[in-house]
Image (cartoon, rainbow, N blue to C red):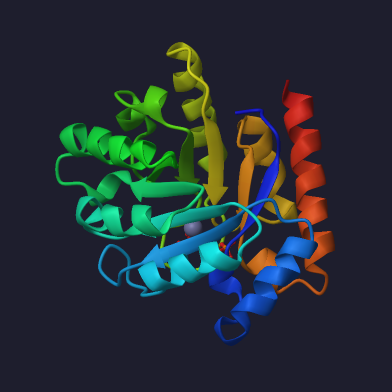
Length: 231
Ligand code: DX5
Ligand code: ZN
């Protein structure tokens, strides 16, 4: 919420056969964070990478690794992901059977390992569900598409949901980073930055750009200006 603007390329849009080179490319092109989308083919229809991939990613990445878990059984799987490490781990609110009891448990497990804890909401989950634990989070991830695939269009109105997160955090006198994920590019970033998002995931808009460094720099500049204008 109106903090430093950071760009987090999602390597789901990288070339899996050239992953090391693509990660090196984003690192020298001005990325701030590496975003990795873990999908289990159950919580979301797509199946991507798992623990061994995240382990090797941590070993080669110079940037902070941001693990976005789109899996059905986060409490069971978290110990594996925590063991291989990350800068930040995100779990989905909708993945828990009993969020009131289980989300504090998940946050505790992640924090105990010295990792930043984040909860993500799908586009139709009310922001109000964050109230009981937002003060314990380092970051909230607002999905601006339905999770599962890169290359989808930004869902209009996500900016209003970001504003609701800011309002809730202010009401409870807490500070939290707000990340947006899905369809973020030059034409969509300003409205979410104005609303208070500060970490921007870029999948296709980064990896399909002729010049990824320029694409990231432009999005970052637009976001900074929009956030500054809102303050
Ligand atoms: C979608 C993933 C995103 C995705 C973003 O479920 O969480 O991180 O890769 O890709 P773009 O930026 O192309 O929407
Ligand atoms: Zn993601």
